[in-house]
Length: 494
Image 1 (spheres, rainbow, N blue to C red):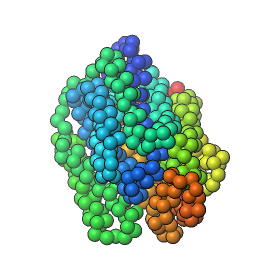
Image 2 (cartoon, helix red, strand yellow):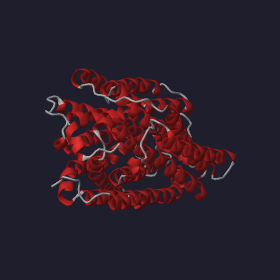
Image 3 (cartoon, helix red, strand yellow):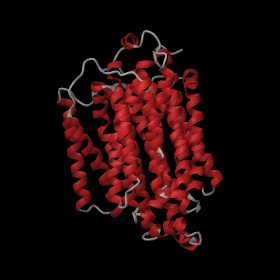
């Protein structure tokens, strides 16, 4: 349900929680762990392709196996978090996340890693909604915008540190080491969180719609499966058609379930709220663009520019630094020029940077595009999240934030699936078939493989330009949508 400003105010803590700053850091770090897993994995993709003999569609499944389960379970996890306790499920999810990470480091076949990435996604689904809703219960309305900005900024450290730390450990120990980066941080968060985080739950607990949760996973998974398989084959064969039909059926059944279930996973009326719908859908399209761009760029740096994993991680660093700067400035810009202008301009700047990456053929130009993409992303997302939170009541904090998180993860999964499939399809159509894998082998394992890299370079370059242009275009659509739907200013803002 949607609360009025008065309702939300009445449910805020009467007195500030003295432990709220420690809780803020812990919840930011918990989200950072989830982000770090994906950003570190990006720089390990060429090494994965070489060591596991994984082709591009298999790598897309390794990346998207996480996001499919994550997005599919987030709404159910948000309801369970409200019902059974946010602290309990957030810290429990982190423990499972660390265990699955250690198992993933032992994988020896692509399918094993795909399954374990799915388990990581399930664990992350129980972590993410609780981090935001816990903050909403320890910070009053006056401090929430600042808390959300700090929470987003700490999480952005995962974007910054992931490629650098990932590249460093891949260079020294191989791709499996990227999964062990999460374990020490999880141990610190869980041990500290047990003592500093207070339990909270929805006093009016309600049943969870298990059927809706299953349909959600089937709809999201079917869509990503269809996109990836079509990108691999380039034909509307029986597998692709079956996937498309299953996706439509699951999607229709899921929407029908939301309309008819006594306790639906989400309330469709949320999306009818201009504030919630504009922020959530805009964020989804922005995440689509950024995920697709990073998926292409980390391969381009290692295959075309012949960088090592560590060098590629450092090369991606400017996007994360600019996200941090944009996040720090976001609340002030929101107050100064308003919600609509801040979110719309930030998303459009990010879209231009993403599209510009396709036209950048030297690293100095890539840096400019990365800074634009990251700065715009950092400006837009905290303000958009504040708008979204303003439309939620405190007793449905986890459930509502889980809807937003679901749409962001859906955007991330589709970004990797669609942009990756387009990269693969255009690459093969341009005469690059059977050469990208060889180029990866040589670029990663043999510095003297420049001749084979050059053979695939032209086809790969054209494919990167096309796929990154699509990623930027989708993000630009999110900017336009947000500018049309979001209010000029939040109610009660100066």
